[in-house]
Length: 390
Ligand code: FAD
Ligand code: DHB
Image (cartoon, rainbow, N blue to C red):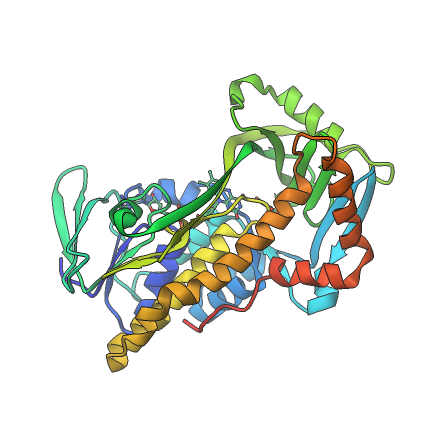
C-alpha cells in the first residue's frame, strides 16, 4: 500500500488526524490492531474540553455529541462533609462536555467513509522501518496475511505500549512519575450523586463521582497500586464510595448494579522530542497523564491538530518549518496540562504522612474561596486554546 501518511492506531489521536488530513486532501491509511467492535466499546475517558468540542464541530462529527452530551459548567468538590460547586463557566464562558470515549471514537469512525480511506481493522503494525529516510515503511499483519504501508511520514498514534514509541525509544528520552496508587473504576446503573461530576477529597483518599447518563454513574476510588480487583466485592466498593463521599448537606449515595469495573494505575510520562526523522508520536504514544482532570483524550486531539497543520503546510507549500516545530509546539500545551493534572492529583489523593491532609485541605479551601485561584484552575480544566488550527 502506498500513501502519504501511515497512521498507526485508531484511537482519538489517529482518527482525528485521519479526518483532518482528509479535509486537507492529504491521503492517509490507518492501521488498527483491534477489531472495530472492540475499539467502539472501550469505556475509558469521558470529559471533553470546550476546545476539543470546537474541533469536532469543525470536523463535522459532533451532531450526536450535541444531542447527547451533558454540558457542565465545572465540577463539585466535597471535603469536610461539605459540598461546593466550582463554576468555571461563570469565570470563562466555556463548558466541559461529558461524552464517553467510546462514543467519540464511534462518531469518528462513522464519519470516515466517503471522506478518507477507511481504517484497516485487525491489522497490527509490527515494525516501522526507514524512519531516518523519506520513505518509511510500516509492516503489519492481519489474521490472514502480512503487508507493508509505504509512506512519506508515519504518525504513531498507538498508545504508550505501541510499536511507534518503541521504534523512537533509542533516540528520545521519556521522563516519568509513577504513583503508589491506582483508580478502581465502575460503571453502574445508579443515579449520579450530583448533576455535574464530583471529586470528594477524604482523608482516606479520593472518590470521584461522574456519569455517562441520567441513570448511569461512572465512579472511581483511589486504591493502592497493587490492588487486586478480586478482593473488591460490589458491597465493598459501594461501602467505600459511600464512606468517602458522606456529607452533611447531601443524601447518601445511591447504589445499583455494577456493569463494568477496571483498575488504572496512575502514572505521568512525557517523551521528548515527539519526532524522530519521519516518525511522529501523538497522544498516549508520547505522553501519559494521571486520569485526574480527564485530559488524555483531549491532548490526543490537540496533538493531531498540530501535526495536521504541519503536514498541511508541507503538502500545500513544501514548508518544513512547521514539521520541525511539531514537538516544541505540542509540548508547550502538554506540559501545561501535566502541571494541571499534577495539581489536581496531589490535592485530591491521599499521600501517607501527617502533613498530608491539612496541606491538601488548605489547597482545596483556596479553590473554593478565591475567584483568582478558581479561574486559574478552570482555564485549564475547560481547555487551554489549541496551539494551532488543524
Ligand atoms: P488510544 O486510545 O490508546 O489508541 C491507540 C490505538 O492504537 C488503540 O486502538 C490500539 O488498539 C491501537 N494499537 C496499539 N498498538 C498497535 C499496533 N501495534 N498496531 C496497530 N494498532 C495499534 N483518560 C481520561 O482522560 N480519563 C479516564 O478516565 C481515562 N481512563 C483510562 C482508562 C484506561 C484503561 C486507559 C488505557 C486509558 C484511560 N484514559 C483516560 C486515557 C485516554 O483514554 C487516552 O489518553 C486516550 O485514549 C488517548 O488516545 P490515543 O489515540 O493516543 O490512544
Ligand atoms: C472522569 C471524570 C473526571 O472528572 C475525571 O477526572 C476522570 C474521569 C470520567 O467521567 O470518566
